[in-house]
Image: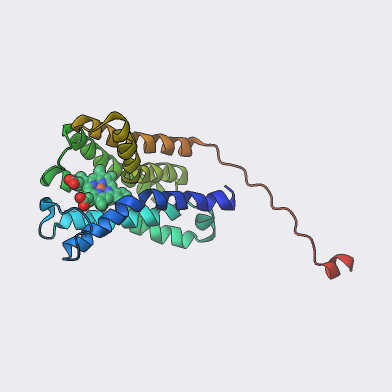
Length: 222
Ligand code: HEM
């Protein structure tokens, strides 16, 4: 992967997650008694622990996780990759665990239906599974398996960003409705998983040997 495409990927992932991460930050400001920069939602009256954990955990997982995918950082700073990986494994479990909690024990989001309810349970559980398999593989130094399952877990989480587009553009085309909204959110997960599978199976690009640098004039002429 060239240096430029190496950094383009995390930049794109950070941009993808900007809307959900920003709306989460604004929700936290509101819950802390700050200005109503988000439409108020009675379901979040008080200080709902699961929502706070979800918002903080997902911001850490989405933003720090994007940089775990840069091969240059992994190669040059393996210590950073390992330390950040431990933080991300915990953050990812908090995202998935709190997502399951919010789905099961809070009133559903108005306008959403049973399909999204079931999908959130499936995706939350799948995310925990991906992280567990990925971490176990890293511990036994099976890095191909580790990479594949961490990419899948990350892709499921950051579908929150893809859903902004599938829902935004999708509803403009097919209109509003409970089932349509649920299907458009499902499309976000399907798209992300398809991209993840493509990335996992893509043959590794051979690194082109770096061209020899021209010698300084005085060295070359001596
Ligand atoms: C990087 C990933 C994610 C981000 C940035 C994110 C962000 C958010 C934010 C900001 C909220 C609060 C919405 C509000 O204030 O009304 C939220 C709620 C929620 N999220 Fe996530 N999320 C992520 C991943 C996930 C995943 C993977 C799932 C499901 C498996 C999920 C399930 C939920 C649920 C069930 C709620 C409560 C929705 C409601 O009833 O209004 N999230 N998320």
